[in-house]
Length: 157
Image (tube, rainbow, N blue to C red; front, side, top):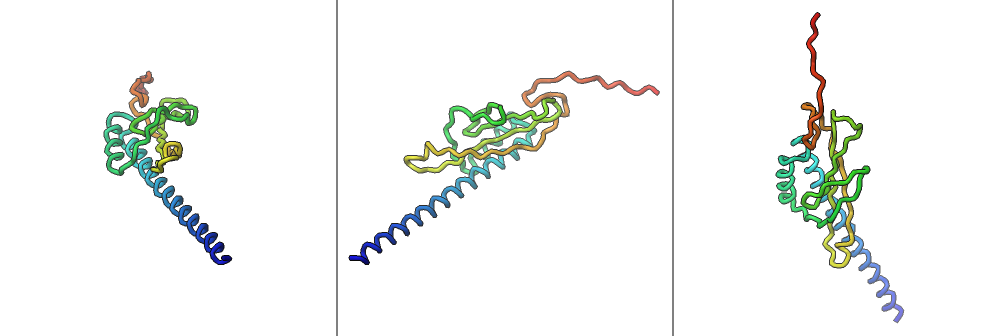
């Protein structure tokens, strides 16, 4: 009788170890996929020099190519006191750190998605990253508004 009770405890410990191992493995794979999508979206925004029609088309291709499961979100969480734009289950934030129109950057937030029946919809872990500075050479902001420029007067010496 004593041996059967100790076997039950040992079996419970083994089952808990296996469950915890699979949970860690599932979390790692989900984080890797979310980070990979996030990194590729950042790369697309930097190549297209902003979040515009060019980048939206390429972001759609990235999402479908990598198999990112789009999380159905209603609104983006506030990040750096900015509200984000929802596009195909990701949040894109326009950041102007210095307040000038010489450069700007973007932040992208994707979400880890775990397909667990009960807690899968409740568990939403964000993965956030930022682009490098994108410089304005034409005097317009990323949203397309033009800013007044100072005319260049040639030196007459």
